[in-house]
Image (cartoon, rainbow, N blue to C red; front, side, top):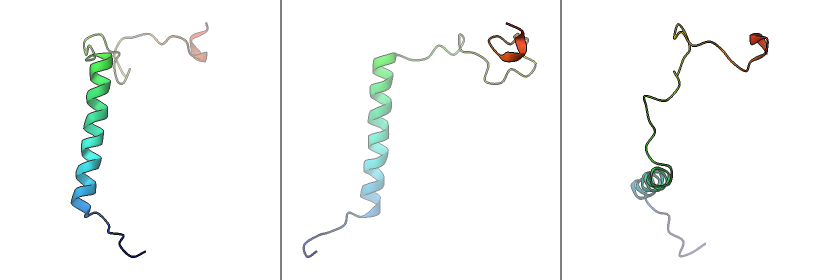
Length: 59
C-alpha cells in the first residue's frame, strides 16, 4: 500500500469529538432542552413515588 498515509491520533480524536458535538447539537435542536423539574427521579429510593406498571404492584 504505497501512498497510504495514516492520520495522526490528535486529528482522529478531534474529529471524533467534533462528530459527537455535532450529533448532540442536532439532537438538542430537534427535541429541545429537557425539563429537569418534570423529569422522574433517577433513583426511586425514598422518593415517595409509588411504583406503577410492574409485576409487584398488583395491576
